[in-house]
Image 1 (tube, helix red, strand yellow):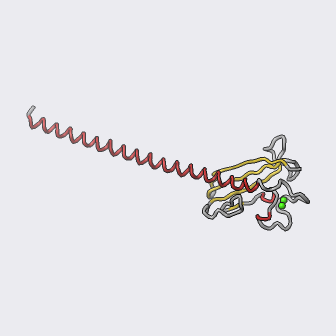
Image 2 (image 1 turned 90 degrees about the vertical axis):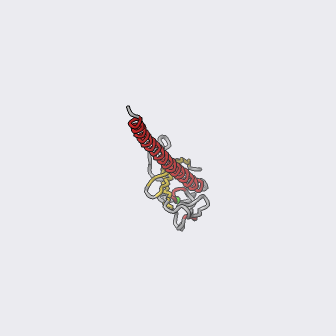
Image 3 (image 1 turned 30 degrees about the vertical axis):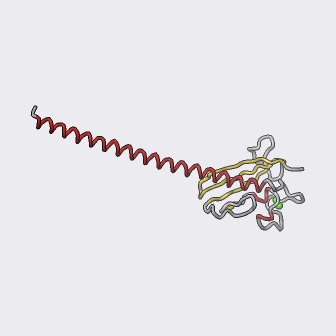
Length: 166
Ligand SMILES: [Ca+2]
Ligand SMILES: [Ca+2]
């Protein structure tokens, strides 16, 4: 083996090593970038879930200040003369309402949450099995469902039960 040949092989091997090192480093950087991207996506999803939960809780807090049923001559839905949300005083007045942008517990529109919505469903349910919906106002148990969406995607859902105050 000549010294020249040895140098040549050595130079070739070094080149190969450099190439492999470049590939390894390149792959590591790519993997790092992918992880960084995944982390950012996870953070965004977590923030979305937190926002959804808090938006649902705002509406739940508002509904907690309402009676379960209008005291006199109850109507399932708003009673005559209750033309706006500010006048709604019992739970079923809110049935089927969609707020977009959402509202907070003080009835203020959350204008910074464009694209978000709250839907309210208020139903009379069977006290023995609250998953069974019965005729409106026919039992003493009310199920309130608040569904929060971002666009068409459901982000949060809050279900509570309330017994009629008699
Ligand atoms: Ca009503
Ligand atoms: Ca009412």
